[in-house]
Each structure stands twice: as structure tokens, then as C-alpha cells.
Amino acid sequence: MKDPKAWTALALAAMAAGGMMTLLACANQAATRTSSRALRPASTPSLQDRIAHGLAAASPPADPASVQARDAAADKLARLTDLLISAPSEILWGGFEEKKGYEPAAYRLTALTPLVWAKVYLSTFMFSGAYEVRREGRFTVLAAAAKFRDGLDAGDYPYPFWHSAQKWQAYVDTTAVLLVFEENRLIAAYRQAELGPSPAAVKHWDGRWRWQDTQGRAQPRVALYSYLLSSANPYAASLEAAYRRLAGSFRDQSCFSCHGPDNRAQADKLFLLNFPNQALAARHTLAAMLRGDKMPPPDAKTGSAGGIPNARVRGELIRLAEVFEREADRALAFEREHGGTGD
Image 1 (cartoon, one colour):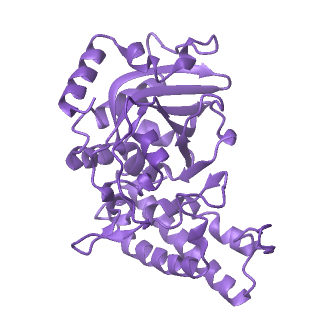
Image 2 (image 1 turned 180 degrees about the horizontal axis):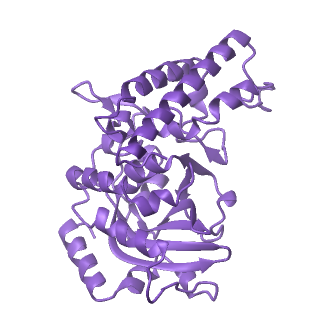
């Protein structure tokens, strides 16, 4: 439905009428299986119930092109305590496939810090309030009916999703966000899509992951630390400087050719290093990987043994990675201690 006002009215009416299962029926065919049973405590709401209500309150239906509504949702989701406290130091994020099920090991997923995932990615979806909680093997799954904000400007997305027409279509056709818990620990999140009646409008991609707008401002704006961190964070500037130095060295070593959204190396767990706030997920592993000379990995096609042969260059990269880790930890700790939700 293209009319945002009509979609909003429909979603709210469905919620008021108790249309939870109707909205989720197409998004969740697994609900009919015997392994899928609703977990609906009669008295005390479960963690998943509280999160579902929190999602709807933080990011309700609105005009999909409204940047104000998205930014307001981002701020609220970044403080949705039940959601982020349930998450470990990282969230694995990607598209759901029924045949693969819910086990993260079956997928190639992007690793993100909980704060970045909630504020930068999850805020691109709107939640009507319709949801279901069920068991899937050893997992508890919260399926929340969702609609993608497909009318935002290019710089309002974490990166150009339309670099792949298939990926952009999958985001546009999202009908639910699936949160997968293991013993109340949020381990993965998937977007579930139902093929729409017509192809999404194609956005042109010029091949650049990052760019400057006509006013000379860095884009995507939501990938910057200035979007993620509060203006009072005293470590924002030092973190920005640490990332810039590290990114420059990574660029010299062609690290971004593998650690970009197109995942050329086909990593099972993808760390996006070419976007400032999304690179935070790798902060605790970069120095260790470099010390072990495991970056870049061996390449059977070229016969490359992997690693960085120049010891001086590798040593400098390790030093820069350690500074980045320290400044990132300080910045996220400030957010956590001052009302934010750093991981």
C-alpha cells in the first residue's frame, strides 16, 4: 500500500481489532507448525512481550518518507532497555529464509553492535504493534509485524541497500522483523519479506558506498558517529580521529574490498569496516586478527598466503586498531552511563 496515511490507519485498526495473527499470517507461515506455540503469559509479560510493545511505542506507523519520524524512532530505540540489555556485544542481522530456519550459523550475516543495530538499522522499520511470540526448537522467536521506510533520502540509510536490486526489494517487501532469543539472550535478528505485487522503484547507485552531498556533508549521515553518539559525549572527537587514521591504513591495504556490504569474500560473519559507526562491531577483534597475521585471509585463486608481509606496516595497523578499540569502548561506555545504551 503506497499511501502512508492509509497504511497507518489500516495498521492501527487491525491492532485495535485484535488482528495480530491476520497481519502476521503471510509473514509467518511457520506459525502453523506444531513447533510454533504462542507464549502468552496471563499475568507477567515476558521479555519478548515487553520488547514488542516497546518497538511499537518507539517506532509507530508514520509517513515512510518522514525523516523526523525516523530520527525520533532512532532515539527511542537506542534507549529501549529491554531490547538492548538482552543483546550480547553484537547482533547478527540479515534476511530470513524459511528453508534455513533460525540458526544463525546457517546464514551469512552482518555483525553490528546492539546500539548501532537499534538506532541505525531497526529505526528504518515501523511497527504496528501486531506480534507473535513462539518456540522454534531451542529458540524463542518474537515476530513483530513491520513496514520498511522506503521513502527516505539516500543518506538516511545505513548504506546504499540498492547496490543490489534484490536486497533493496527484500527490504521494501519486509513484513516482519524476527528477533531470535536463546534463554532470553538476543542472538540474531532477521527481516522477513513477502514478495510484493510489483517491483520496488529502482534507486540509482553510482558505485560509491560513501559520498558528500551538495553541501559538502559526509554521507550516509546515519553511518557517522555524530548520528550515533550524544552531543555531550566527550570521546566522540577522539573516536572519530582514531577511526579516520585506522580507515586510511585499511584503505591502503585494500581491506575495504572484503569488508564492504557486497561481502566479496563471502564471510559468514561480515564486519563492515568502511562505515564509521558500523565498524564498532569489529573493535575487539581487529588487533587480535592482525597480531595473528590473519588479515587478509589466504586467497586460493591468487595463491596469496594471506597476512601483511611488511612487519612495520602490520605493527602500525595493530597500534591504530588498539587506539580505535580504546576510544570506542570509552565512547560507548559514556552512552551507557549517561542514559544511552552503549553495548
